Image 1: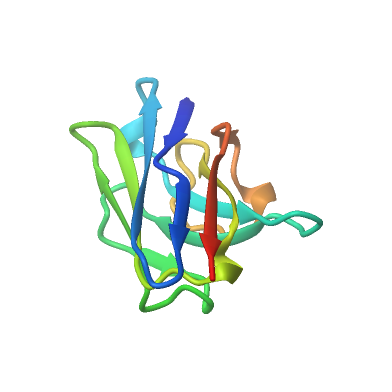
Image 2 (image 1 turned 90 degrees about the vertical axis):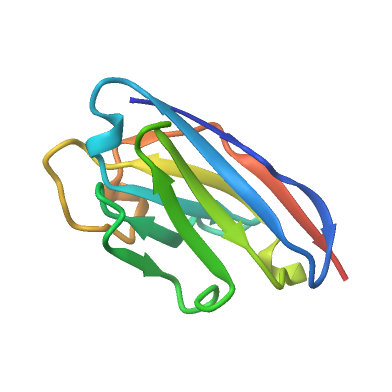
Length: 125
């Protein structure tokens, strides 16, 4: 599975942004997908995850109610809609995929086998 994240940019606090993660590979549409982020000097942290069907999602407490993860398996793309952005959301955002056959939505980086290159989101106050 190859992953390509896009959609990052510089926005003001309160603005919205949508990230996309295009996946390639014959198993992409059957994999649990997640978004993580890493701020400078910080460890990579879980943001949101979605089951292969899209029927189950999980969010970090810090983004619950503001971010929405979704997927379009026909397009092999996963999205992260980010609303009411805050300066503390500033980070490089990575999309990741679990190995085929693993159905639980993991919340740690070690549970994901494939990673995209990251897209920078900067939120100014």
